[in-house]
Image: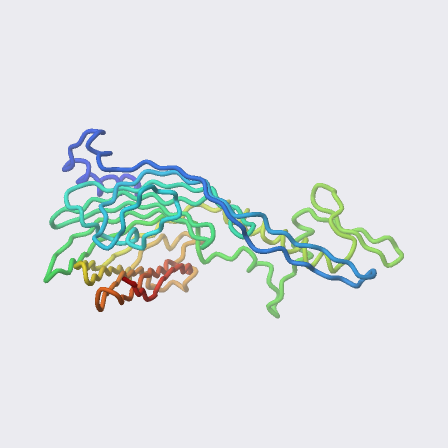
Length: 348
């Protein structure tokens, strides 16, 4: 029923925007690229347990394999690239509205990457339509480094006043049950974790040789440690990571419906520009009968979710200029952000 509701809310876009495939993709760019480089430098780790031993910890090189399609009208402050190689990033992609009225804009991007030894598959997909007095936006974001993944659709009434576009509407979001801690049921009264008992429940076994020796085995029966130190420092953290990931993946996707109010402002000249936006979601509805809803994890109380961004640039004269760019997002108990600021001096 909820999926049908979302579809009905998006019908104005389908019914009012009559277009062919050629018109839909007109002015878009389809791109793909491979990028790579060094990661963290090798680190030498020394041990004197059995004489001097040296172990080198190596981090494999970083890389990304990226592919996508993009149709978003450039703002005046954005440079025009000769080619897209996937390393470009524009904070303006997070803006609620675009400057292209009565035209569908979109971004479909996937990226296989390895960063600091960790591999991810990141995705960012967005479709946006801005009319004279309303707008809708559908977005899917998966950022492995920030550990956030969600689907969001919004339908908003918009009103322009003195160059500022105000908007009010509703948002539907789908996500994993953020706030849920799979390890909470294993906490002791003193706040410590009964990790060995949890490991035994997960299929690990412990064998004592009767002479003070000990050996630990994984659920497949393979020996994973012959010392308590390695068991606690290496095996247990890996077991806990796998346990929490499996428990979260076994839970159903959560729906959250929210009221949203926001604004967008954009003004550009060759000497200065300001682009800023924000959205605030103060009232939410999620199924309170769902044991794993964020409403229940938050003590059955409302909470504030918000996102904001700013892009500012100013040239004092033909030589000296400053800039400030950044975004900040807080959804549920997840926060992710980025910023850039600096000064430029041109020598003629």
